[in-house]
Length: 101
Image 1 (cartoon, rainbow, N blue to C red):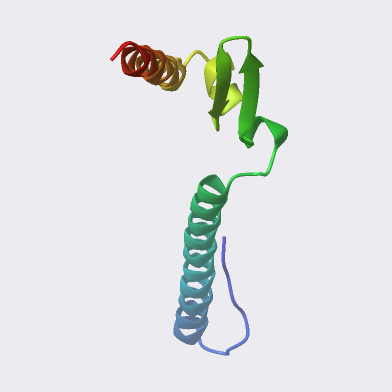
Image 2 (cartoon, rainbow, N blue to C red):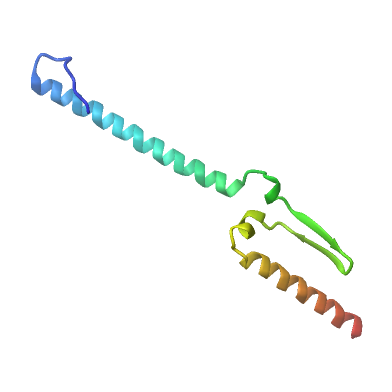
């Protein structure tokens, strides 16, 4: 709620209160937009958390390197993991074909 008693006239006080209200609403909107931009940048950059780093796993058959976000797998989003495993399987099959040929 905004009210103003700076002026002698009720009309002038009303106009001044509207100016203050517009200013506060504008500031809130600017803050909201800046927060959205900040959140977008944060989501693009990442947190540097250990779960976002590139990982390398050494298996007796070979090495798998990826930058899979572990939290997406924990949350149940397995598409990225399945894609990486299919890609790795195809690589192994191509290597076997190259050895035979």
